[in-house]
Structures are given as C-alpha cells and as structure tokens.
Image (cartoon, rainbow, N blue to C red; front, side):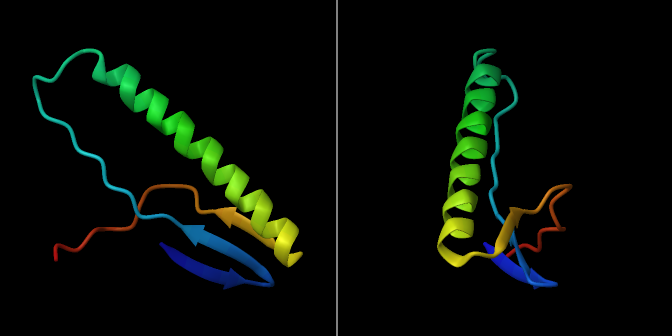
Length: 71
C-alpha cells in the first residue's frame, strides 16, 4: 500500500495481485466477482472511517496498476 498526499487530500494505492490457473473451474468467475465486490465495499468503508477521523479527503486510486517489478 502506498499513500500519497495531493493538495490536502490523500490517495491510497492498494497493491493486490490475483492469479488464476488456465483450465480452472468456470465457477471461478463467480468467486472473483464476489471477491471484487467484497474488497470494494471494505475499501469504501475504510475510506469513510479515515475521512471521519482525520477530517481530510481520502480516495482509493483508480485506473490501471503501476508496472510491477519482480522481487
């Protein structure tokens, strides 16, 4: 996770990697959709709590992830 400040507001860049195996179950699509929804809801709740506690604007970065560098 990386937190940046921009003109008095905070932007949270989450790092999350998710992989899958070719030939996996067709039900995995449902699982990935469910996980996506859960993480989106939890992230929004966290942002709302941060805003309430700090009085500052917080947001989760949108768009494509930055290039990953192998470690």
